[in-house]
Image (cartoon, rainbow, N blue to C red):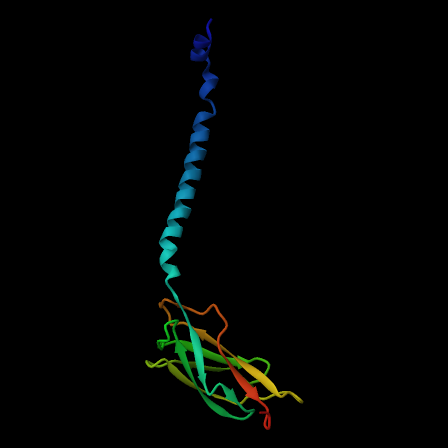
Length: 152
């Protein structure tokens, strides 16, 4: 019997083939799904970074009214952003929260304090982008500097 005849009657020749085809198909579909998700997520790279500009940026350890402006990466004001001012190296009794108006500004009342023998401190500012917008806040935002009385 020649090798061709032996191969023709051997039923084991295709035993593993269907299983291998199914595995290759499943792996191929999974890889295609991952690639399509990456392609459809490309639009998420077109987001703008948010920052906050406080006015004034340097205050003393007493009660102040601070105007905060949420701005996009192209320096345009951003409405409906939530701005949070909280303790950093300077202390606040409680965090201050405000939502920006159509001009991108919000006003908060703060009463910062410094520790004993502390000449300078900072207050942290966080900003939450408006819901459904193409804005993000990944980088550090501006801070409010608190200087003790008599410090120049």
